Length: 275
Length: 294
Image (tube, rainbow over all chains, first blue to last red; front, side):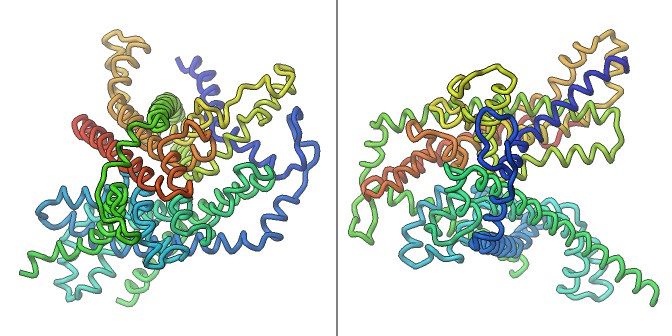
């Protein structure tokens, strides 16, 4: 039985590898290639000129990365502030018309948000919100907020009220109860929601384009002309940079969370020693 | 009194944000699709945009293309996703948890890749002078660039389908895999005691177990593909285009007369996605997809 498992497993392994990595091979090769012509299966010469252009010559690259991250982080911070109390209400209180509130909050997951953005575009134009980072931030909230709320709900539903009551009996006020009891418990869920929020915000193209009108240059706006018929080497470098930016942002968040817990643990240890 | 309204106060900021920014936008778009736009002096309601939309060939062509592409994307990513999930499951049976963790993370890689990048990956792989074509030429299967089929920016939409199949298969796997992982090892032994062969085991136990999650996952991919913009904008053709792209073309065409029509397309799109979303929700509740069994 185990024996005829082996070739099957090798095949599966190969399939998985092909499925994930094969698509990236031409992307990486093209970004380092110089004038790669058909029918050569490998580029005839390698060069760093595309990367050089993307990272150093074109000053708008770093600016675009900055704008993208700025928008993503503001959007995510606003989302967290809105989502945590909402999740609290959903999980811990008897609500009348709960289904209606849920339907409102989760509607942007089903209905494509660009529909709402196109609808509100002219109003934004009239009140001067187009072509501004603030306008784009507002436009990014509805596609991202539902995911943060959902993540916060998941966290809240595993948090027992008893812990807060204990803290209350020990004399903790509402603020310190939230900061020392609730927040540490919610943190992983908030981080998961924040990751999604950042990821979705970073990869928006159409919404940013409509509200930003091409004036708010995020990385996807900058990169689109290249990938729709520009120089393949530059387009590939930009694509890798774009994908890398999202992954790095998530890794940083992951690291920050780990550090937060380490600090908490260290603080608890010190307290333990003092007592 | 305060205790009673407290939960509503907690909910209020999030609700009002979505109501203003999202539903406000939908409503704003709806009014303008009816031709009501006081800022330029239009204060009359009419169904002109909708009636001209329903009579235009371009709209129906676009709708058909959208359904075709979404259905094929969903079907292919469902099949690929199931294979991936089974592959993960079989690897899991024989390897340690750390390796498994690594594989799990690897699998989510296509999920974190932005759609535009995913689309461009497909361009480089499948265009007529792309990577696959170069490889086929190098090993002598094809002699000229035109020998390679047109798979990108083709009127059928294969490029879009390939992009979604690759991007969404991991999503399907992610939905199906937890169900597979819950199938107890003993069930296999029990089935063997009753004389079931491997094939019977898969047909009688594994397939029925994963079917609900699998169907719902495929359906979610369908609804998503139905209303997504970036990939068809990059990989499609100008005519016939998928509905979101069609709406954008109308909206950005420059003539103000097309705008109500673009917004009408959006409203149709919104209604269709709500309908499809409700169907998905109904079945996922009914089949208990997210909770499973004990």
